[in-house]
Length: 498
Image (tube, rainbow, N blue to C red; front, side, top):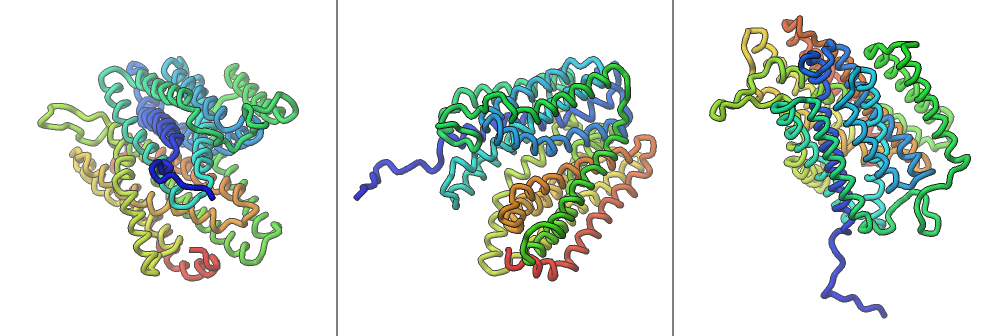
């Protein structure tokens, strides 16, 4: 009989979770720091180091970039599973993120700058989903210990999201926004260095290819051909663009990309509902996934305006002067508040959902999504008040934006983790991976819509701001009301999933 040594109990968490949490912290430091700078840099004048773009074009570029982050997660996962293994994918992703930010720092033209954004999106697509996958591999037994491990990982994400905009904003204020991109690159270098140094603590956790425990890297051969073909197409397009054979209209490209994503999602839902070999119960649940997909897209189309329209509002119209310090807070620093609010309130929301479930009062996905959408819309209702201050000739305090970010974070906590959880439970068992990839398309589509919506706020027509913010509230509140009305039939279609 085996004897358990109670003097040396197993650790609460493997050391690998801290390696991954720190890696993700620095990746998010880089991402959110750069994101806080992006639109403000694009619209700044050439004399200030920027490109002097109009708001509509800058917001469209922002939307394409943030949408690309989610789109690239799909090939990023495929590359790790089929070719490189997850650790190698994380390392390659970190190198690309670093290189892309350095390109942003020195890019002499808008074309090369956008190429840097594409490199970063590719890097994030390789790093982020595979880091999350290894977290799961560290806890093969599942259960509460695994949930706690993901909570630690999530805290690392938001710690980086909090620090990145603060550091980037201070560097932009005291030096330049271009140097802020270099600091973002440095953050990823630190994350890569600690990952490489401490990778041994990950043990055998890697869901990619492991040939007898050897390096998870497939030898060159036919398996690599699809990747090489994709790279060849991208390179050819870049060369033609550089030679001026064709140009790119960012807002138009955003609309075309949004149409492509809608077509992809519609085609897959049509397959799932009409052609897939699934049971009637699973088909009913697929209808629920479609409803939640639409709601998620609407939510992110408002939430993701934080880095574009709301960031521009902070820069141009908000009184950011801290009187007793005789100092003006950089607009970028306000982007740190959503991550701070997640750190503070995620445990509160977790406690609320568990407490309701213990009393058999769990509201279920439709009501939670309705709650999240309404809170997102209410955030824009707050911005209606801030916009009225501007139209009256004043400068609103940052508390207006901070309140908006607080409400949006509450909405995020009711939509994002809830959605991920429900999709894994609602999807047909043999199609969970495909449906999860489809789910991330809602994030991508929402980001594109956010960029296009932000382009509608013109600095030359401030008087229209209250009505425009009110329209976002009305759309979100209307969608929330629809979800409440259809909640009961939707819960019947869920067939016991709760």
